Length: 113
Length: 110
Image 1 (spheres, rainbow over the protein chains, first blue to last red):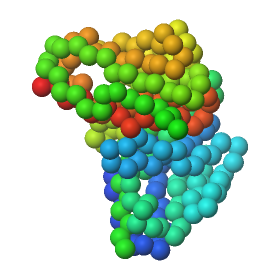
Image 2: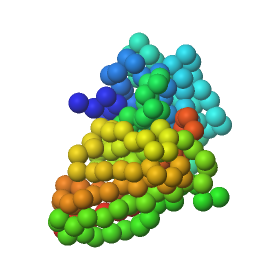
Image 3: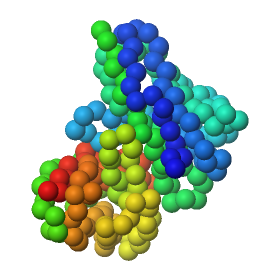
């Protein structure tokens, strides 16, 4: 059973609008969450993260929100740009677990000019 | 600025053949990881290492072996390749969070 789920396999957004990517998790021991971005034929690259002691973390156009009671996090991209078109993975880890990450299945974002 | 380097980038094997995937990192990271990526399933952890000479099983270790003889290298071995091992393999390293990934090895087993 997947502990981290991204229920939307794909998302299409107009350039300049907001992109919202969602992620749900089931393991209450997860205390750190990350978003990775992946272009074709490349490895995932780290985008932004959030600790469970926070409910929001912002870095430029990217903001991650964490709702611990709902076991839900989301990534907001504002404004969206065509270069943001990629597959986005959310990942989670728990304290002391060898820094292992559990990944969601990914969401393919397409930003249309 | 090499970061994490994986070799080879592509490989086609026949069922039953063996091969080794090499991962090298130049960031002096303690932790190293091997993942496989399959459509719709994200990245799943195969094996990992928390330091030179140590290895541990991840989520999907069956059919794979690993070795970490040097801090900068992490090898993933397939002793007898099976079609179910057709996948894209990613290596990662870290000194904590986040993990830094290589560009992957695309492996096809016929």
